[in-house]
Image (cartoon, rainbow, N blue to C red):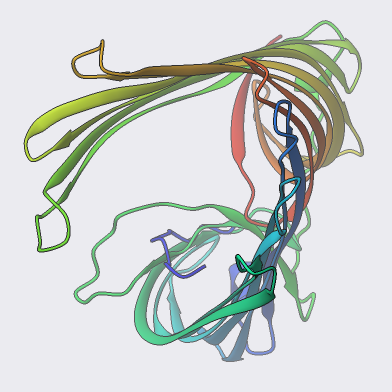
Length: 399
């Protein structure tokens, strides 16, 4: 919330372009998420927990044809706590509100639009860490640490719009705090249009050939990255360097056991390796490797090209963490984590031609159980989220 990652803006909606950016129209998007988790140590019975809530709402209103004002409000709250037998409890609270406003100008015709925008964002960071303690003479005391940070930052925006349904669309916005504009990332999401229904054409009829019984579906994601970080030496700390490599592959395959009902298996493997050096001396490397697998079921509803879906899944995950110092005999550390997750999801699917499915997951609900080996701790986590800036997947259908 404190850093605006650059994002492009695509919107998928299917009405006449003259009505999309006409005076009086509005676009809405936003997100809501809640996370709760708890972990308890096996040996010392120390318990850790976190509760977090995030919320954002954005509205773009056209005050004249092709000219709009966009405003966003957001709030991120986190509460971390720790309980250790025989010691005072500790708690840290973070509250990060944000507010932004921008002026946008849209260009283009038919179903396509591009826009340029500029504006201001204001963010705040408020943290509080109360702590109780006891002096050697038995007297108790309390320390209440508070910190406040406020900032106001100008930004520029660049985006593009393609409309494919009367009221719903998918968007991504590119926002940076520098000039001239430098594209550095991409984030997608959904939006909802309000205003006049003039010139709406509605969605095209679709036969739903992709969703017929007996069809096989293949989808997946592949990601890889490499980055390096260097902190220069100063009077308080020496020079440090780190290099990180990441790889992730998550394929899925399924079959329609009846019209509109998909049953399948999702797999995944990911690896992150990081090397660390201090004063140009290699001090060690850490690696996290994760394997996961689990069945899923998904039900597609309605008719037409844009269809809602709901699903459920079970996932089994095995994670291995290893740290090796240099030379290796100096220090080695590692653990394993086994996780079982049960969840549900809902979203929208767009039928492309007869062989492709584009899906946006809007809502997630999950419950996880974690067990570490060696058994230093065990815990559970729950999460609920509704997001109009969701993850998108593209699936191929074998008819």
